[in-house]
Length: 320
Image (cartoon, rainbow, N blue to C red):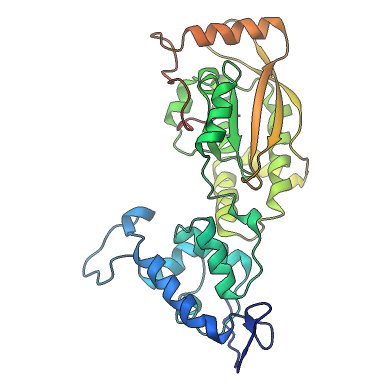
């Protein structure tokens, strides 16, 4: 439950954009905050967030109670925020509202400034899109697989070689574009990762290293809760509390189109302009693996290939 507190302000602090006591937006910014939130809410339709349109809808966008529900905050609290009342807002709550209203990075920063809260660019990573320049870089790495992840292992972009490698039938049924979700809900017999008991604990520990910056955020908490419900093994690993950073590793994969394991060295590279995101590039660890990757590439447009086109954005069947 969100606690709503009000403060009486007579004038703002020009240095931080807050009220005289340091809490909430300065009085001069409250009308602008109210107008900004109303305008952003009006442009998001129920269909945009997977909700039915309903009957007798008088507003062109979402209702206040719908924004509150989707953001995981109280209706009264959000109503007061949109009315420009002097209430306190945490970064986690502002992040949740920003995601619901589909704010882009400049709009998100503007929301923080109006609310009198210090802006942290790293919190944008869940909603950033990969531009043509980054997509071009990972496409140029073909025939080596490459992918762009955020801190939660959401797949933001892949190249064709990545899709070649993970042409597993079960993956085609997966609708969640997240590596961990795919791996923990894929039957072991069809999972492309060979040494699951070694790789999955490391991936969960890497997830936890990013979680510390997002603890309490609705998007992260709901993801952890949903994956825990879907996979008892994930629940066990998550409860271990282990933490490791992303790093160089040798991973072993399998593919039904080739005989023998494919051993690849993965390297994580940070990306300027994409906070908390990384490019993960895979290179063969031995000559046999080089030949097997080449075989997959030659089958790309064949009847048994994955059907991936040259280059392009992330597919609906991500893998590690």
